[in-house]
Length: 497
Image 1: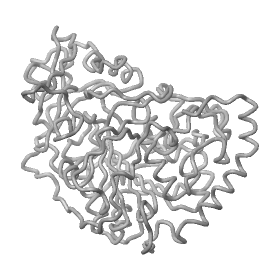
Image 2: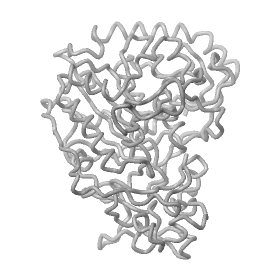
Image 3: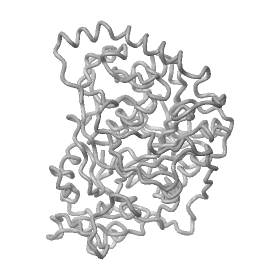
Image 4: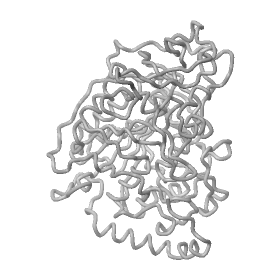
């Protein structure tokens, strides 16, 4: 954690910030290949400089234990000598504790997952508040689990599905990626909160509310992001004034794009389904935060926000940028309670990964797959504390690349901050989102990328090996798919954040 600076020290940093940025960019441009993010991969590149394309696929709302708690050799569920899960957490609705259970369902409800719920779930390190955060409303399945409409959403002893977990049978492709590449079992959400602040941290290392959209120094940390006036929405002017990684990449001439659902609108909050089908492939503004940054609009970068179809075309043509973020539309998101199932999300991700693998850029690509928050689902690992904002709860992380080690578990402490550091080290000459040097000072409390707590995300790679061939997977078999259970008045939860 960067120590708190006195006002005098802060002013000195402010006065030298722009000069620091100019120097950092000059060094960066002098040391990088001439065509950053292009197909002209340098034959003599070493280490991370063999990676010309970093792709970050960010799904929604699953904890590590929910997806990989029983994967071999990971830090999964606590078990006894017989291999039985020993976790049992308080359940006020059943009057006794509840254990995790395997579910064959590809539909879940999850639980509330805002900042307050994150703190309550963690429960000062006891990791036992997950069920207690479910609201005590009589028509909810966790309150009356024996109701017929609740069959798909509770366990054999009436446990709410925040205590559920799935296995290879339910998510075979995700487990196949873990077996063939690298699974990160200590990847934490950067902030102990919900989707919006998580995505802000993903691209800027901070989440804040700014009293002026044109003054980074007017921004103050905001972890909860409760209240509509704090959130940028489609059709409104940008409001996130602090410095993002997009700004540093623009300064250094590094190409980037964010890809969102094909039906996403930028002129209004609610979008209609595309005319050629009934699929409402829209990405909400709370997930698509990049256009909400003042500098993105100022730098005429809105054209860098493109669609999933554009991504597929770019992957095929070999025109992927240096850095890509891919954010799902609602059906593909894996968000509990959405119109799509786990299989809908997994099939969408498989299509994205296959496209990169089949394209001409594969041998210089690394794909990072994660989930933006835990969705209220149980996880047993206590998140480390780094500052007022987190870290948040543990989420799955996968590294897929021709240089990824085969079948390894990375147990270093990592977060979305580690993604920023990799971008900075690979494409920005190690320049950081640091108010003292980045040229756009803001009052963020921590330079997250330099925390000593974190491991080195490049451990996942063996750059001495020959590039491994693609692992092309087929979509999850539709014969395993289940029709959506009735999202009845009994089963459907209140809208989680």
